[in-house]
Image (cartoon, rainbow, N blue to C red; front, top):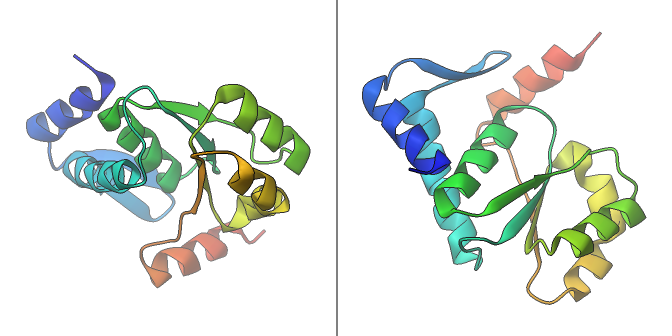
Length: 147
């Protein structure tokens, strides 16, 4: 049994139960499993395979959860890093971990894009910007972050 298969089992046992709550955004186990499977397929098309590492330069929210479970389904290794790392620190972690994929989002892009040329120079490494699926999710997120 793997972690990826545990999510699939949870989706079969309790498909309509809430698995993730991120402000107003919510996913059931069935929805999380489906999104993770879709993301796993996308990562596989980029060449990510079992045992490969992927850097997660993401904040603690829904996208991070989906990416984590997608990696588990592939048998890949999630390498979560502090999204506040400076570009040179991020490059060190990327090189030291041997990650083949760096996932980032708009709010964490500065440190990734600061070193994008260095990242692209590494053989077989992809940098992927995760975008929000729905414009209303972005608006809700911005609204929740206001003081």
